[in-house]
Length: 148
Image (cartoon, rainbow, N blue to C red; front, side, top):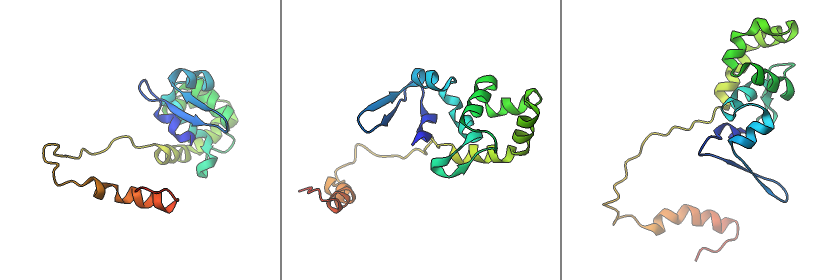
């Protein structure tokens, strides 16, 4: 899913699978393709929407318009800060649909923070690998893979 492109950074690449090949997308290849840094991909999606997730963007703002806006103004906040620089029709559409873009931003953001979980590596004698693997083994058995 293209949503994962928002995670690309200096230490994170995305592998896109095709029918016959794999494509590794890093920060440099992302910028070459889209014309802006990957940390602005969420802003781009928020404007244009995401058909694969059934999320409507701002009416009249498709991929090319969203790309141009991000390339020229950067973030969604910067677009709204420079709203008076936009053409009349574009300004009206973006201004009237601010809530759509902001809701999209919240909905499409992949949460990357997790709460810390304490695990005592010194006291592992009671942990059974067989028990830990039961859910995985069950799923594998359902698709016909023998785990014994």
